[in-house]
Image (cartoon, rainbow, N blue to C red; front, side, top):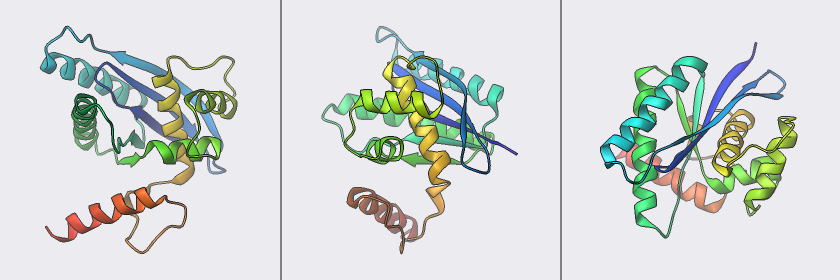
Length: 189
């Protein structure tokens, strides 16, 4: 029995999504990929609604068993961070409505999972996604390839949302710090 995983590279201007199927042996197969665009000339609420409506359609068509979203760790452009956070929130809400678990993966984690190096360049990630999924051509734009890489990472790493605080040697120092901060905030509630 295969599991369908939706990977999302959240963005306000371009929101990439990639759907893969994973079998018990961790083999992954391509299902679908796309990019949802919202023009910067639109009102912010309209842009958020447009992306939310399109993601809802993707969720309803593909019915993933899990959604993996890229977690933006830091960004020099505050507007980009805010846009990504807004889109991630909408996607999380849509998944919650459908009882679909959501996991988050950092860009470094995704690069390491698909290329073997957390410092890989975008073109390396795209090339490896193409090879892993046996695609005939490179997925474009980069947001589409990134979304597939996020889905592959989630397929190979499993559901990391239930990790305890005593854990994993595979995570980076930044990932560990992030995970411990989240666990601490949950305990203080």
